[in-house]
Image 1 (cartoon, rainbow, N blue to C red):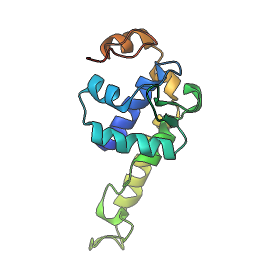
Image 2 (cartoon, rainbow, N blue to C red):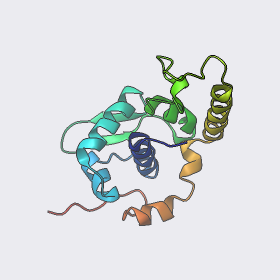
Image 3 (cartoon, rainbow, N blue to C red):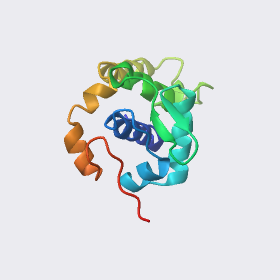
Length: 153
């Protein structure tokens, strides 16, 4: 099982926002903290905003922030919404693929069961579970608890 970078970045962005306790942060600050592409993170933020998981405010004191409480953000739901393809084998593709074995193969059922088990683990957790160690996460992101990283002037 493999997650796309888009989903990985979405989860990291949510974790950063979760330790902020409602204070907005800019996408640029997220990019700098993680050493990631701002342009890619803008796409991630747009997806999360469209899912009503974050809010975005323009202007000098604007930024992005969680739209829901961390305990109300299910990790499994985020993964399902941000991943675009769960076709682990050819026959699971939406067009059915072109595998010669498809009519008699039982692999598809086994892979489907494994995928459901994979997602079931994520379904057990919320964003609150991932950020229980806010102080340690804040230090790693070079933030004081509840404060944004300092911008270079």
